[in-house]
Image (tube, rainbow, N blue to C red; front, side, top):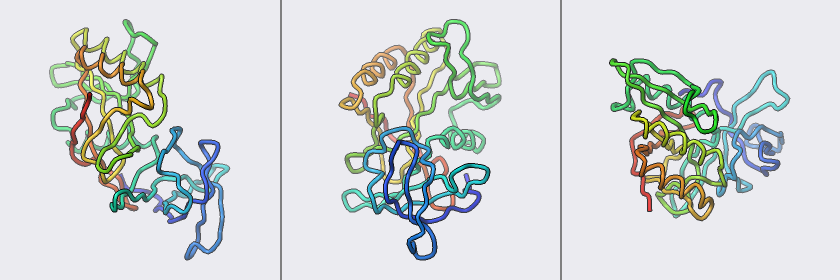
Length: 242
């Protein structure tokens, strides 16, 4: 996914009220301060340190002139780029499906934001319903991952997520009915080799994950290739549970 228009380099002053951040932009970061949209409802633990280098996308038709897209972080001597815009995750996966980045996922038909229908526990929608050539469905729910507290290890969630637990329960119902059901962690970082559950942050989600896996839900994790020019699905990485 190419960033268009091109991103603008900035430096973070502070993030606040979840969806706002003050940034310094302009030539040589010369004191031009603006308030920008932060498209990430999570805690952004470790990603909102004042002085961090970031990249913004110019916006038109909105109250705020920019949206925050990337941040540079450094851990254990490793510098990495992180995509903080959780709203991009589904589009990145959709492009990856079209490009064959998920070779064992069916792509004869791809539908997005599909209501589950009869049998659903919470009248939910899931991110993708894929069909193979024989018409067999594969449901996929995507979770954007940005948290890393240990070198090379991504974690989810970065805040308590009742919605995430509900999605796992819905996927489990589908798996028990004989349909393929996948929870896909998209790690929008360039520095992680595996994903783990942050049970200390949300023990309820950790328990829901254990139950969903026992009921047949597949858990998959993929990294991202990130630069100030683009962000795309990378290679599959390990999911470690327990």
